[in-house]
Image (tube, rainbow, N blue to C red; front, side, top):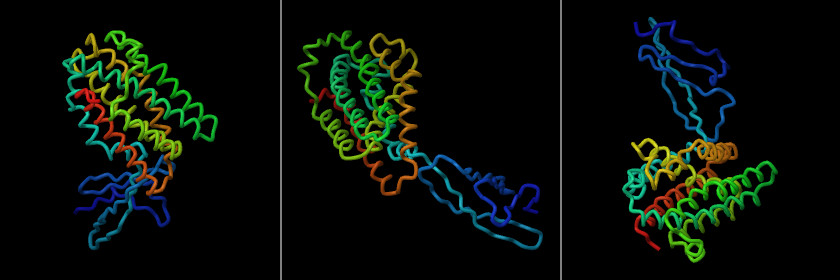
Length: 287
């Protein structure tokens, strides 16, 4: 006999399916339906065909299983292959292995310093776009974390690499750098706080992913030149700051429409592509 009563629980008419767990014997499959109150922004619907097999009859019925996803999860899925390509890019790969040419890293640090100045302005637009004081303070903290936190890594390296203040003042953004930051500024200026967050997120989040990946490479954290960079982007402090960005994005992204979701995906994908182009620009030392 295929059917074993003790493994099956059938809901009464009108029962809340979101609070049920279904066991399908004999395949021994478990169907989990999300509980009420789940933090959701989107769902995918699947129709699962379950068979109830009795001694002399068969019942077939459908159960709709809704899989709920956060905005950040949807955005990540849309760029997963792009993000994987970062780790195999020669600049990123050689950085982790400690074989990257110092002159390429020097070029990168100077361009990234100029990038972060514009990046901070995008956060500042978040303050302008915010309607609530609490949200204004969050964006203000992000400006502070970038200018007085992340950029400290760059200032330390600039001393090591012999980059003078005069050189910084005379430095110009590369074409890729200018295009990337101009795109973020345009998106943020024309959009709302959620556009600002999504435009920023791919940079902050992907750097955490790269930093954590490199921190697991043997002796990478002890490298005399690149160790500090890896420590900075794999630190608990940086992880918390990035998680705050992700959580805020998910909170503001609840209950958005499918059309709005597609708009945000375009921004996130575009910025993720720019991230790859930035690594390429740095490796080629291309202005």
